[in-house]
Length: 460
Picture (tube, one colour):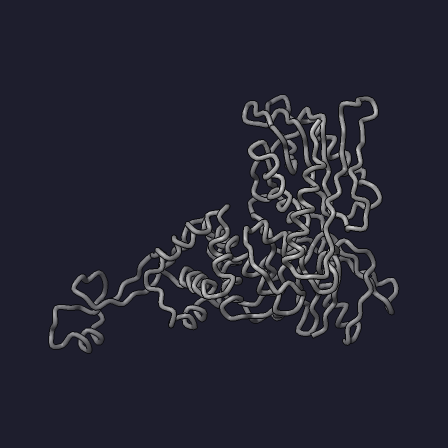
């Protein structure tokens, strides 16, 4: 296996693999320049986290990477906010790790996922082939919860019975075999629309498998902020015929994709379950329907959701966090004469929002989260975006929080509006610690960094 190791948000990274250039270029071009929205298509067989909801028009301009072929002897790759693992063909794998991690350690990505998923355990944390499974264990509860939002999967299942309560056609040969001389029972079969089917059985087997792992309790029971426990109980209740010995049979019944027009969220859950139970590594090919070509993380979205777990401790109930992927907390910038709201906006965070006519009319402060590099200066579009939010919500204080390396300047930068000293924008760097020690040591350092960052968020 040839590995191409990259860092996110890094320009012109050189790479080399021991294969002919034409085959490498063909493999890279299959995903280069494509954004997460397009890679979420079922034909690519990628797992995207956080997942997209098909009914929402979520714009995502950030691509997985771009390749510069201007110098064919030294092609270069430029990455954006996306992290993860991609298998391009049978012999090429691309690993994109956080720019804040050194070597093959994925400490920062693991830490953000643990905070978001409310899971605490020590993962393998490196970028090797088996580290793929650590991420599957994180994501299983989240994809389970997304699937259960559509209800417990129901399907028609053929059942065979041998009792006195006849509810279907009689199986004559089976009846003669088991009930002659007559013993009061009738052999028959039925076709039932039930929750106890091949899909829910697959989910149940995955749950039972994870329960046996050392991290099982943290993965399945640690996610108290969601309905993971309730959904696990729902699956347990829906699968009374569960039998551990049937695992291989259940896996064989789930090798085809789920194409149900309603239960769309069960297809990525099916792929995760098969990867966990079959211990499938990343694979590439057109014939296998259970394969996973890659797992990708939207760094910008992860950073935003991670900050939400940090800020909620400081601002408690006064924190409002709209989410463009779920449609929660949607606001509007304009309103036309017919009172039709247009131009949807999703500020990352609002502090002390005042609700009027069902919309947030004003807020004490606006907080914007940016994961991309902001080492030298803030982009013009980013400044205009937060100024628009300040104007829309009648706020005098804006914060822009972005991660920086420990060697960078760590003091906040205050910017005051040219003709109004009461309107301030504060650039708050979040210093991501570097450590050559264990993952536990990194977690302690991150807790300290969170406390220092919260001290910098001083409202007017």
